[in-house]
Each structure stands twice: as C-alpha cells, then as structure tokens.
Image (cartoon, rainbow, N blue to C red):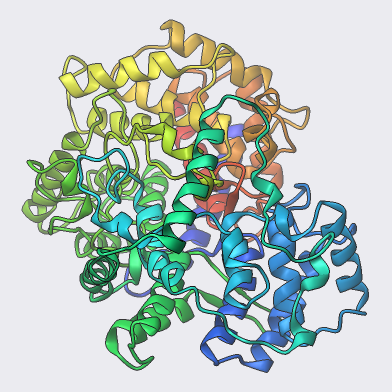
Length: 628
C-alpha cells in the first residue's frame, strides 16, 4: 500500500516539476529574501533619479504585508524584528510618499526608537542613510580606498576576504572615498529615527570589555579616520584608479558584478561617481541585471538578491533521476545542454589562492564568470553523471574538468569553502566594518560533504588523499550532539543531511560512530506530525538545533540523511514519508512556509521556492530505489 501511494506521489511530483522547466532547459525558482533588498532598490532608484511611482506603490504594498504587528520588519518568517531591516523599510516607504502619520509608519518609528534608534543599525544601513545625508559619514567605520593597494601577502587584502565581500567592498571604497550626499526634502528625511539627536559620535561601537580583538579594531578605526581626515594621502588617486581597473573587467561580462544585488548596486554608484553615464555599457549592464531581479505581480513588487538557475537545475536533475525518470528523457537532455554551456573555463579570482589549478567550475547564476562555486560544481557533476546524453565524450570532458577544479580547491584544513580556499584569517571578522560577521569564506561542513559526495559518486576511492582529508575535517566538526552545522541551508538538519550523504558516497557505513550519532540526533528531532523542521533562530541559539515546525524541504533532508545511513524502514522513516504524502498538493508540489536557505547566518536568510518541490521528490525517489 505504501509503495503504491509513493508511486502515485512521485508521478504527480515529476509531472509538476517537469512543467516548471523553461524551454531553454533550465529551472529557476524564486529566491526570496527579507524586505531589505526591496527597500534598498527603491532607495537606489531615488539616488539614480529614476524612481517609478507606480512601481513604488506596489513595493509599498509588499512592505506593508511583511510588517509585523509590533511595527518591525524581520529577517525571516517568525523571526524577531530587526532594526536595520525596519529602518530601510521605513525610509523607503517615506521616500515613496507614505505619510509619517500613517499607522504603519508610526508603529515602525516607535519600535525603532525603542531599540535605540538609527545608531543601532548595521554598517550597510548607516551607509545607505549617509548617502541621503541622514547619517553622518563620520559615524561609518573607516574603509580607506588605499586598501585595494595592499599586497596579497598582507594580512588584510581584497583576496583575503570572500568573493561576496570583495565585490561589495571594492566599489563601495570608491563611494566612501567620495562620500556623496543626495539631497532630499526635509520632510522625506528620517531624523525622527534617532533616539536622541543626530550627532557624529556612534555609541554602537562602545567597548564592552577592556581587552578584546574587537576593542583593538575599534581603536584602530579611530586612528584610520584621523589619518583619512588629516594626513597626506599620496596614494589615494592611485588607489581609486586601481579600484576602477579592478571593476572594469568584472563589469564587462554578463551577469552583473558577482551576480548579487549589493555588488551591482554599489558598482552603479561607484561608476557614476567616476563620471560614467547611465547608458555606458559598464553601467547599463549592471542596471539591466538589477532590473532582472525584480518580481512584479498585479498588486505587488519585490526584489530578489540574485538568481539561482544553475543550482535549481542541478538539483532538479538529481531529484528527477533519483525518482526514476529515465536518463535519456528529453527534459534531462535539454537541461544537460544548458548546463554544459554554463561551465566556466577561464581563470578568475580563485586563481590567486590556487594558481596551479585549471578552471572548470559552474556558477550559481545564469552567468558569473569570475566566481564559480564548489556547491554548484559538485551538484552539476553528480547530475551530469546520471544523464544519457548523445555526446557522451563532451559530458565526460566537462565532468573531468569540474572534478579537477573541485579537488584543486580543497583547503589545507581538509575542508572545502564555497568560492575560495584557505580563508582562515578569522580576526578580520572583528573589524567594525564587518559587523555582519561574514567577511570570509572558510571551509564548511556542508560544502565539504557535498564535495566528498561528488568524488564518491564519481568513483574516487576512500583512500584518495582528498577524501581522507575531507573525512578528517568532518570528524573534527561534528557537534557533541551528533549533528553538523549547515552554512548554506537551515541549519543543522541541512548540514547533517549533507554529511550523511557524503559519508555514504565514500563508503562510510551505517555502523560508523559518526553515522550512528548523526542518525540518533535526527531521530530525536522528529516532530509529532512525522516531519522535521528547524528555525533560523538555531544560528544564534544552538540549543534550538533541529527544532521548529515541520516543513517539506527539511523533512526531505532528514529522510535523505537517514536513507543514506541505511534507515529506510521502521516507524521514523514511515512517519516522515507519511508527512510528505499528507502535505503534497493535488498538483504534485509542496509548500515551504518558512525560510529554508542561509545567506549569512544571523544576518541574511533566503527562501528557495523550488526546495519544496525537488527535495521531497528526491526523498521519495531514494526510498523507492531501496524498496524496488
């Protein structure tokens, strides 16, 4: 009976997912973020002089719908209010013409002031306010443009930080060097968000302990500000030219700078300050990519942080094959055509850390030539290996290049990061500018597991040096409770699923101590309804690991982890499967009510709308493989 029910659910899910494929061969689901991106986009349009009242009205309706009852905006469904997100939403609505007497504005204003006001905002929010003259530039942490001239051997240089930090910071250095102020009418300002009054001192950087690295960097920030203001700066013009020269090749390729909203927006501002017109290809290309991130509905409008077609397509291919779709199915052949054309064969920023490694990775977006990533590369290669493609030699060449790049990007600690290697200078996360705590791209458990899984599925032996080092990394990083941290998905359920799949692929059996502890942890975290769920709050409070209302994607992750450990039978698996069957929609899809992805822990979260479609299908398919 269960087999028959699952067979029917798989057929419905396959039909639904296949219907979502684009004619070109890719899948692309919405990548939803909190309201900050939409608010920033509205404010950017004002900076550029291109505000669209009709679009603003739709965006305001979206912002109103996302406001909490207490007046704040949060970072994820069910999360606490966030000061920075609330300030940006309030400011964007006010610039769009919403009166300060509006009940939504009044509630937001009172809540923001109760939290301490504008000085409690994060650095990027303060910069946004400063661009409009609503926050003193002197209250923003120092980041002199001369940073771009620091040699690669220096402790801090632009290649010692993550790709996302690098692409955001380099254009921002030009903006911060010029410190522009876009004048706005007084009635559109937000001085009322200051708990006391607008002033130069920034109490948010007050020292909390006498001796700490953060205090040391706060003191250094004051020194750098004094140097910026009073000391001769003979290399300043040279540094601006260097930043410009770094940007030009990265703005000249499709996809936008880094393929992410903040970097592209900063690039537009920087290039305009350097005299480039909006119709210049280097600026117009970024503006076009920014517009592509918008989702306009009949009555609402919001903006995504980036697009995820390679990731969505690779996951869809893996899920469809696991669920029994033939490898030669036309949809999979079209997807393979599209994926093969996305492989990046040119050296890029990662080459600084790995000069002897040849290119061969895949990006997350439609195009991101300078920044392929390991997660997409591993998932694409595993998908390609399962497709019966007419030109088998072409596929094998692409896979071999991808595997060589993947192995070459392994860190000295045995783990894998997302875009770079060996970014271990963790002290840099203490500088005042890095208050988001995500300046670096270090090795992580989920990426290491994905790379191990890829190597194992493609036939690399367990005694291969890369696999031995990766296993040692995972042994060191397993928590006392038995779980693994999830850097790019929420959270310990995601990390644990990823690791169990990786361990199984390289031949670590169900009797291994790591596996037994992880299985026991997953079984303890199953909810009464049979599903699994985890709140984003677990990033701030590990005591909440694996705790939260059930969702289809997180339930599928848990089941995939258990199945990889050989636990395909018994009450735990049956209850998990029952949850997926009961929550499937008549059209074959599922709905995730909560955020399921992680941009930056504690700071920025995501909701991949297709996760609720291909992950449950994948789990049902793997179960059927074990019982066919």
